[in-house]
Length: 362
Image (cartoon, rainbow, N blue to C red):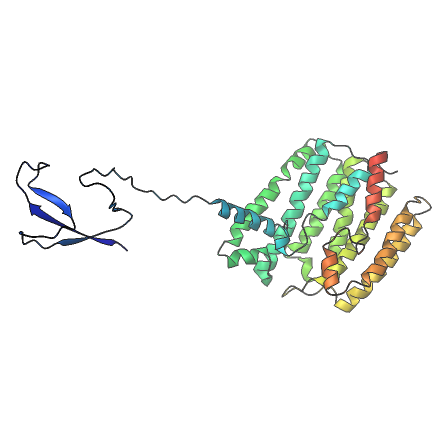
């Protein structure tokens, strides 16, 4: 809204202090000339009145302001946090990190006796891109088809375009696989590792994408993540050394651990609208305990070959005890605390330390 300014003129003799037939005065009443003051409405953005400036002084020329849309640091920070939430890389996403399964691959590197190399680096980058891309696609399809309240729902609520964010982030994830594909073309990756990678991608894609979308079939969806964990361990192991019995035994151990995590997921997470539940809560609670009893027995079978497997037997029995106490809020809190006895991953940490000390386990 503009500000009203009144200007009037009064005749003066020639030869006054400036060469003009009229002298301009600000807000001076008209005395002898019958001229009514004229009110001009001038926006404040164009004219700023300075009453403290001495009379007769010249006002410096004012430059016209040009408004440019520049993203403020606060907006950039908010965009960064939004991207992390959509990718499940921050606590604000409300979901378990998409990179948690990468622990299977890191354990495989250590047990296989891997040393730092560009192959390990590019393979890990590829796995990160695949894990993030698959979780991103899963969340996007759940939001688009079932209306799930996830990171994409928050984007839509904030007025952003979820489809644009999905395309941008998925492209970034795909670029992470480029160095690994170059290694494959140069025969820098064993055929067995390439085959296991393809099998894992096909399995997880069938879980997320139509027309199969095994997520909508409870009898299959419960086993997708455990089988993918076993394949993930085997893939990273095969990057370092050829397949052997130890790889097979530990791959099945990873399957059992991920099955335990899936049962916890069923008990802790609210069901997604339009997606059938994998198991009802009482059944999931029973199998949460039974699965660890079976894992303790499985680890005990291999103690004749690797006496160190006794550590895994102890950890599995510890999970049997602790998971009986995990109810309600305890389950929700303990699920996000990887060092809690509820998970009892202490055997994996011991194997990792011994692998670093002795260059792997045979």
